[in-house]
Length: 162
Image 1: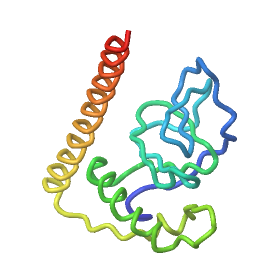
Image 2: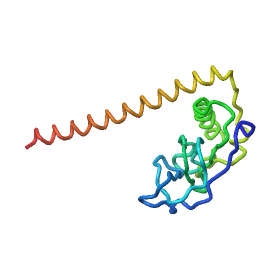
Image 3: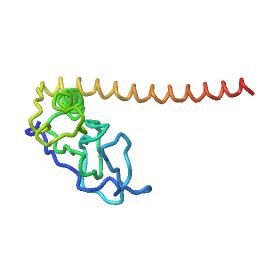
């Protein structure tokens, strides 16, 4: 993968975030935060480099910044949606193979630069990448619906008990 993009890390402590910042701030968590200054310009992909959500990825567009253990992939030389889905699948397997029992899992730069990714034609990349992006969006929408239904259920149960 090191031949397909530039891979760096953020330089900031996770506490650098500000509540009403202007730019996205990616940490090793699932949630996106805000910050007042940027260090990167998308399109990019960020990858959580350690902790419980190791390997969690975001699409990063526009101006943004990143925590020191968050990997930032820029200058991607292939369809970004395709690369996102390939990394997501292959990196999780690599993390499982290389984790040591009792240790906090983490990614080292070589795990990313040496990650083998087969690149099909641009048409195939686009079709595969778009499929997985659409699937991710559908899952996110369904998750919102499930949460709404759970809230409705709680309300109806509470009303029944009154």
